[in-house]
Image 1 (cartoon, one colour):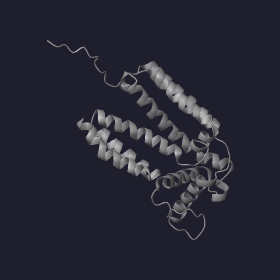
Image 2: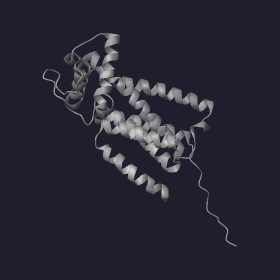
Image 3: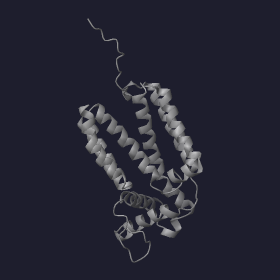
Image 4: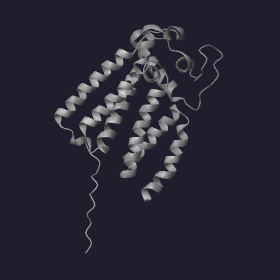
Length: 233
């Protein structure tokens, strides 16, 4: 009689396993990360692609059209990747309601430029949450490893290039990284447990990611094609 001596595979850990003390430490970690990220924000000028993203937000807010030109004539542009312009326009509405209106040129540098960059704290928070959840679930519920992974990821912001693109500008790398991490987590969960919340979460997240970085539209198509095949294995 054959006996199966293979080691059973443990299911991924859930966040419900976190104790009260661990949840408090996570809140402390989040507060510390917000302070660290905020300290890295400067009044450095918004330039190049980031300045173009801001110009599109101003034209959308003031003229109702996404245009890379801050002055007439406003010709439509960036129709494949409209989400950053929409987010930045919403950010402009909020900031102007609280701190008053300024021109596009005045927003490119100084205190207003730093205020506009604060939105990256949201994207970095979302990115860190996705990284922590993925590490916790697929490392067998290791709280220490999950926290260490988040801290290591944030430490990369000290590198000049990484800090510029992910935090101290209005480039699209921060929202793209956050949505990619969250979408990948949903996709992994969909393969492991093909339930509609996971599938819907993956679809929505990768759909939004495609509106930030158009190249990920083809990645999403690949997931639609290959995920059912993986489920059959």
